[in-house]
Every structure is written in C-alpha cells, then in structure tokens.
Length: 213
Length: 79
Image (cartoon, rainbow over all chains, first blue to last red; front, side, top):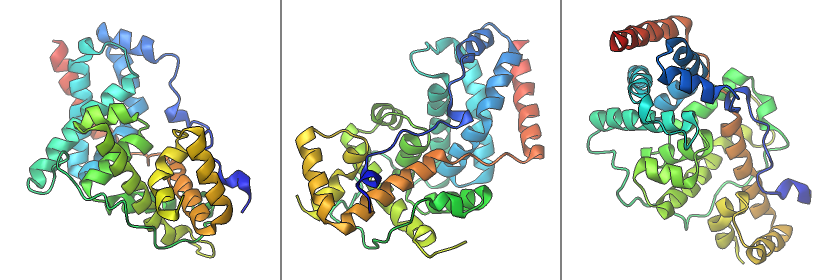
C-alpha cells in the first residue's frame, strides 16, 4: 500500500447540495420578511436531505414524512429567532433532529435514551481486516449504493447512528452535535469512533476486494 | 504505540486533530503494520462514502403531497 493512501481525510469536493449557495442569506432574509417563495426555494433545496436525516433517525417512513413537515413548519414559525450565527441548514438540522428524537422516543420509549452511558466498546479491535481496493463507490450504481448505506446505518443502535448522522453525514462539528443532542464532547467523540468502526466492519462485506455487486 | 492505541486514535488521526509527535508515532506504526493501515484506510473510506452520498429523490407524489400540506399550513400562518 502506498504511503499516500494513508493520509488523513483528503479534502472532499462538495456535492451541489452541500455547497452553501451565495443566495442563502438573501433567501432567509426574504423569508423572514414574509416572502413565501423564498422559503419555498429553501424547502426545495433541503427537503431530500432533511427527509433522509429523519428516515435514518426514526427508521420509519411515516414518521420521517411528519418530521420533515414539522421541521419546515417550525423553522418558518421561528425564523425570526434565527440569528445567522450558523448556516441556515445547520439550524434546520437541529430542529429536525429534535422532532425526529421525539418521534423515536414515542415509538420506543424504553429504548432511546441518548444521554445515558453506553458501552462504546473501544477496546474491541476490528476483526475483519481486508483491503477494499481503490474505489468501492465505483463498483455500485448510485441507487444500489444508497440502499447499502441506508440498510447499513439502520443496523446501528440509535446512540451511535444519530451521532454519526450529525457528524459525518450532515457535517456538524463535534460541539454542534454535542449541543444538539445534549451530550458531552467526550461522549460524542467516543460514540462517533464506535459508529465509524462498526460501519466500517459492516461495509466490509460489500466492499472487500473481490466482492462484486 | 500498539495496534489498540492506533484504533483509539483513528478519529483524531483522520481529522488531523493530533499533536505532531503523536501523529508521527502513528505513522511510524502504520509503516510497519499492514492490518492497521487497512483499518485506517477503510475507516477513512467509510466516512467519505457516507459523506459523499446523495439522498435519494423523494417520490414525486410524496413530495407534492408534503409540499401541499406544508404550504397550506404556512398560508394559514400568514393570514
């Protein structure tokens, strides 16, 4: 293996949906002033991402639809409180996460407590150690890959799944994630590490070299 | 530095959140440990694959139904 492959996270080319468009501030300002068309543009820009976030947290399609609806509605109602200290999307994600957690707790009242101690099992060494080859993403069609990723993340327990969703999919900072979930920073870090290792292990069955779709 | 401590530091290593001496100890270990190299590399790929993934489009009927309901509520709020 070449040394260059060992480098830390290489800079990623942002996807179109991840680019903060220059007009976001103007759209938010217009929506605050009552321009519903501006708000509709924001909804169109983020509805797919918010739906995926809600689906990944609740693991239920109907709940995810409700969460998306409620998140946009609440964001519109409370737009006046948005100070612009963070991206509008980050603020929206926090609203959606709160709604999704409420749904999840309603469905599984005894199983979902984010603030309790969880066994992060950091002493467990990864068992399957096989190279994936240069680009596993290119071996699958986008829809197939999407199916693999959503079924893989669904296998994680909520405390790990939700932290991974916020940090590595929505790209919130550790501090923003801790604040959104009411967790300490060390708790976010240890859950994130465990989630990453668990997902790596689960993806191994699809991506190890020699494995094809 | 042993394999167990490498695993504990994977997140910090990948996020470049380590002091230079710890980073260099990790890299020294990685030069000689094939298993840890693979774990670090596949963990990095795991994060990138999820982060780069695009959400699936919403089915058009679902999207339209949700939009209609949302804007019905929003219009009520405005009046």
